[in-house]
Length: 123
Image 1: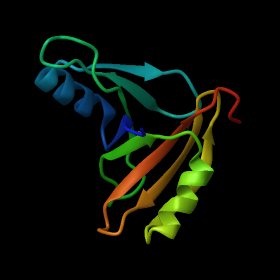
Image 2: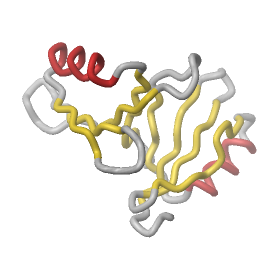
Image 3: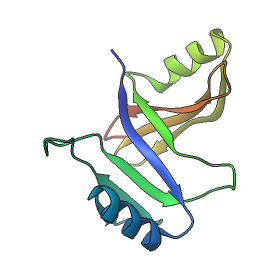
Image 4: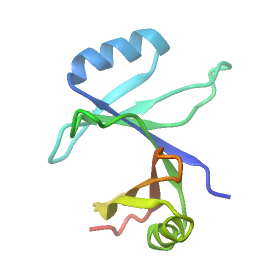
């Protein structure tokens, strides 16, 4: 069953956000090597066990908010289902090279969410 696989946190000042979330929740936030500024976030549950992972990058627009990405077997198939059920695809399928594919959608209640398909061959 698809579930939340990743959350994405848009920020204006990565160092300020890293300090805030690191001190508030003890999240481990590390910069990823690559062509753009992005950070991986490691969380733990209340017992100290690994929790949901996330990422942090520069905000793309003033309206951009935290997005939960749901892990699915096929971004293409789920984008079709979103549209069939009355939702909208806001960001069509795009590759995250070496990691997978994502899309951003809106449900019938105007909530945004992402779809995530793991595929190490994504280009």
